[in-house]
Amino acid sequence: MLGLFRKKKEKTGPFVYLSEPTLLYNTKTEKAIVGIIREKLNTDNILVPSKYGMRDTSKYIPKASYFVAIAPLGKFTSLVGREVRIALENGVKVYTLLIAREGDELVYLWVEGVPEDVEWLSPEETMEFTKSFLNSEFMDILKHGLVFGSRKREW
Image (cartoon, rainbow, N blue to C red):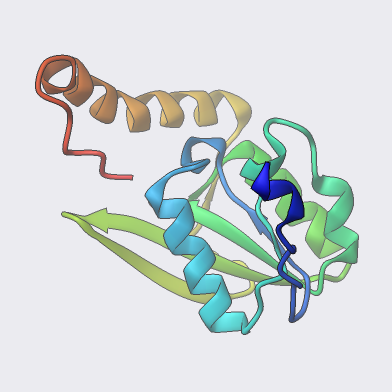
């Protein structure tokens, strides 16, 4: 009840469209990514697609001042790749955030534009990448999480 009367925070700074693979939705990595964007672009006006569920938000790309594409392990999933193309076609300034995990640390590289060495995955390759990506965490939950709780949760 009290949440109804809470004042919404006013968003400041340029509008940033975040394009991330769905496998990072609502994870601690996503929170870290939003923090990096706030720091690098000095804004809290960020469209985070996980807040919209699985709805298509690409109609907001042309309205954005900046577009940030996330490339886990140096790969653009098919969805992120499609949105990068839309941003480039509409003249939106693109940044790429290359991310990886090293133990409990998130290692990232902030790049202006799209690096040439980023791998653009097809829908079929995206499915395989997602399966292999999620299997490591799922297997840990099965082995330890059902009884003791899983502490691994890399991403």
